[in-house]
Image (cartoon, rainbow, N blue to C red; front, side, top):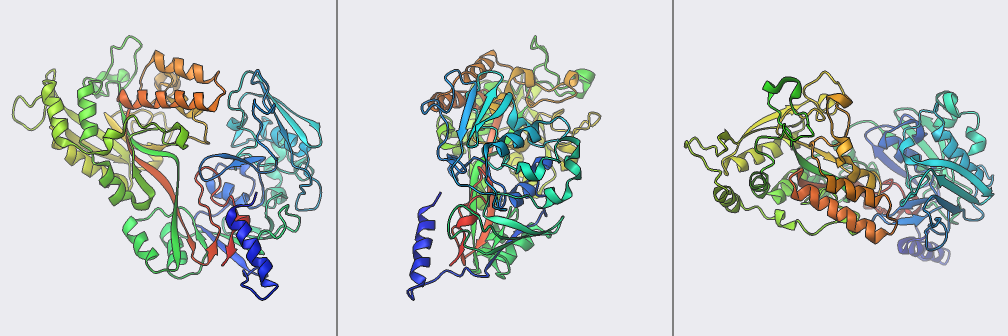
Length: 569
């Protein structure tokens, strides 16, 4: 796949032989800083982003996602669909046809048998595969010939692009890993540290939790690429020092995940050495609204959903109240002042790809404290005793609001507390260590899943571009509670038979536009029923040197997805 920029670079390189401008290539090295170091290059045995990114220079999937979240062929010539016959009419199988002539970096041919083996490797019950969920519903994977792979599912699979699409499930070489399947997977240090791949680079040296050195793949399928002859993937340090190395001192070419103050980052960029780049996928910082009663006096029934509706929240299910709380918030101020380039005000829980983004809730983008007060007054929810706090049915509007300990989140809490006080709602703030808040300790009262407060705040998003699994987080069967060990994703304890029916319909719908319409409808139900109050669309923030061209920041796939196109300009 050649972008316009890549084609231009090739043309410039051709001119160099005639005395024209040249791109530095021979002996040139691209230096990549990830302040979290890679501990392995086998992402199937690790859930860490750093491992997935480090491995992406070497290992590749059949197809991947571009910066717009669109699927693009990578080791194949086209994406299988029902229309082109690649997906069966009954939606139970997908057939991939591999591109001809692709070689592994050791010069051996890349075949369908490598793809089959990769699936067997991950699905083996003793391998401990970190991305096993990408193979949900897979009944069999078979090689019809050396260049054709058929994946059969146990039932209809309207979106069959989990296996081998995106950087979560690249292909590993059967010849290298055939003795590493199952329980033996953890013992194959050489293979896990230096996998053979089809990507633009080859592992030269791997030092766990420190640095990875790569050289250009001599058998890479795109002639003249990669433009860099070497790559260094360095770990350690912190986000601020990584940013400084690219933006101020010029010691590095790329720095990842720059979670630092927007003001500090802008000041660094002003030095003129590098450029901050941002990409958005699906992560949304939101306020989750508890639909059950978190009163400690309830004992074992605290924050527990009951099918008869007898344990509902005493006032947060009242439309006028949660809607007024939403109207009082200045999302643009939070995004611009606390997130900078990495945040955009939003009114949806499902922000993208663009085909899935609703425009039906955009009125939340304008703060309106006066309208919020008027809404409460009109509903008869007033401050009857003059203490500054409104009451509903005799109950003062006092909410407890928790989140993880994090400077940006505590600043967000402070702003929201002030805005809510302006509409007669009193707020108690709590912040909890992230390891506890996001932990799974069933004995702890402070986990986000137990949700023993009225409001809680965190970021979540969809893995991949298809939202079916993500929207399933609010299915009735996902309601958390003591009977499930507080496991489940429906932490708001919201119940809707209509929502469940839309999910069932989506599971039988293959046409992209129809799936998008269903996703938008579900998003609107979540937002318009006060299940959550979206705040900020959070992007991934990185930076690259101004001397490096071709970087296409991507939040849907590996950030380093097109490193073969990077060049020293």
